[in-house]
Length: 629
Image (cartoon, rainbow, N blue to C red; front, side, top):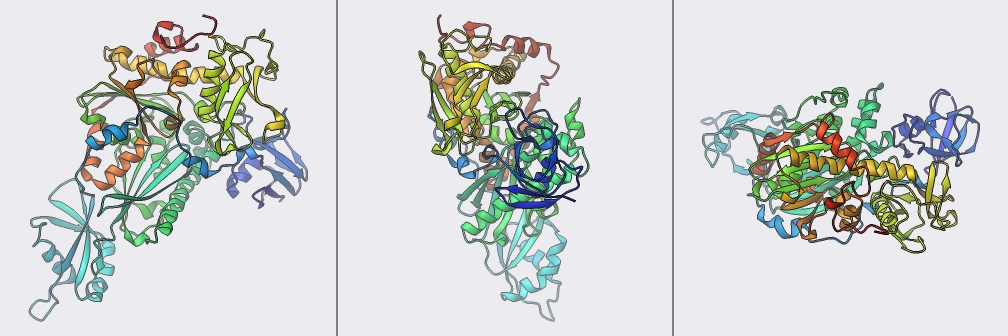
């Protein structure tokens, strides 16, 4: 079998001649951009063959299509710079924006410190000939004499194997970990440690997103955030969006591969957090996770075939606490995962956690809560009622389906200003490095700039008579040269095409049509909104005026907009600190009325009207200036 070496990772794998190079890269953990998950339609999995012979499909702009290229001999393959992922970009500061929702309103949402797992220190009397009850009975007796009087206890089986030594090692002083359950009168003994371990009481909260995974190490005694880390979701190698990954999960051991990848990512973040703070996994008491419905299914290794097809049915929407170790998370046996409940196939625990995290369920104002990502989710409501929907925006805002689109990493174009007379761009990249491609915030910035400068008309077509060399015919229709090849990291012109514009208009149209449909479904309009909360990592880098200019957000007074940041992680953190916050998630998931927009005629009517910049009805966007108007 041929050996394939991938550069610059210098990783080698032996594969059969009938296995394509994209699959080989996936197996060895080398990332190659593949928006479609290897379906052969995105043309983004470019590689360069440095030596050896291959057969397959060459790309028009140079290089080979990894998903359609097979080794004939031993070969060396170079992965281009646009496929590199630099975690430093995840910590970059957000865009300039109105006041943060959390800084102004977060303090009004305060849950009593009451984690689902508590620690109790006990001093037990030593056994004697007069008192020779079993170790477990002795422990139960002492537990029942304090504040837990009248409570009955279930016991984890592994406690029995460590209990004798734990009691006797420290002279019968122990710390018991007690997990609360559905019924207040029944709790579960999950661990017994020798000595006083009250201060060794930590948790980790995770937000598992389609693109990124974020984690916080929490001190359950002091209610403090000890540290935090983020990384890219390694499942991106199997598809940029959840649809592509669900397709991958259907083949062979695809589901197992995706489950193992996310477990490995969580393990990596856990180890980083623990090592950086000189603490042990033995100090962990629980883990909380907020994730969309598909990511939750992948983590648990649950079937996703029926999430993919109508009527879009998940295996489950609410989940009992599960042992982390059973799912490949390398923590002690007693550590449970508490998962945020989901609402529907495409409105998941990340949205429920976000709603609780910002306290929308405690506020009387009519609020539109928006999470723009690889799948756009929206919630409308207040403390009395909520309606929700998912908008099939696709991965365009994450760079998917865009010719030179890429995720937000070092070298991605994140800001573009277009001169209104010369149409020359001013470009800023993440990290100040040479441009490799354009990320989501850069794409919106570019689209808004081209429209307001008059380079694009309302239909999203480039004007041909502007006399600018930047606008030219290309292989995918007319295009705008954002970065010339002499200045790019790829050695190619980085362009923005009419096909890209069309994809973005469809994506923003789906979001805006979703707002209108949800509002109309409850007899309201845009003018009735008291505020709009923008959630998610992408929202942190969104320029408000530019997003309104292209018709992605409603044209409301800017003081009505708030940025919540990673509200999903905020909710997961709240659930770790307080069982009451976790209970609120279950209540919120039940009070949300889900509207399926996939075959909603109102939605389709609005969607067609939204396929213009910013909309066919200019009255909906009074603050947007139209070039030449």
